Length: 255
Image (cartoon, rainbow, N blue to C red):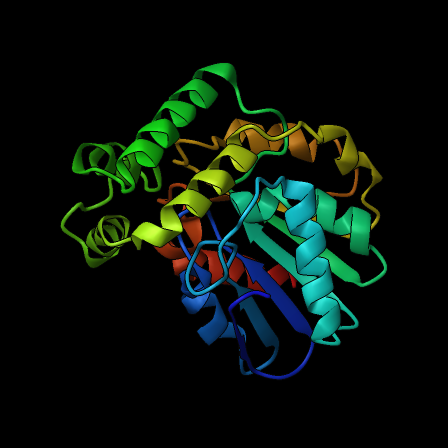
């Protein structure tokens, strides 16, 4: 069902990436942990090499698909690590698979309703992408900076590789990318789910995250009395890449 990488041996870590990225987004973490853990990183629909969607979807349906996929891999227990949309899927993963989840780590994410102003912005971007069957250059100039801290070097390999990735998305993937976007930014709010999570729950957010500011992580952490909260210095939305050493240090201390 999904394209994925499966490297290492030991207790299982399941990684789910951000919107518009793919399973290789987690390469610094996979390389860091694979000597001690079995690392499974999954491509969401329309991303990387995973299949396309024929119909509209929602986050709960995607989570149930991932649960089934892990069942087919015969995974009995795992730690769930999701960034952005990966984090938004976490409450649903717990709802449908709580007996197999050891720990949940939610990074640079928010499971409340998307604020109206940003929802309107994202829907307008998706409308343009759908009509043009690509991400036009003016949109790339708007979208790419959202994923990084304001101080990121726009001539760095990290930034340029992502911008080029947006330019070279396969046209056949665009309809699924749009469907996924509407599922993400038109999501239901499930903040109340967080209080019911009985496994260790950790929130990690880049201190310079633009789309998912640290105050959202603080809001979510307050809803679960046993949660932990970490801020990643010198990092924006894709904190695991912009400051991979710090994120690896945090993850190593809590996994």
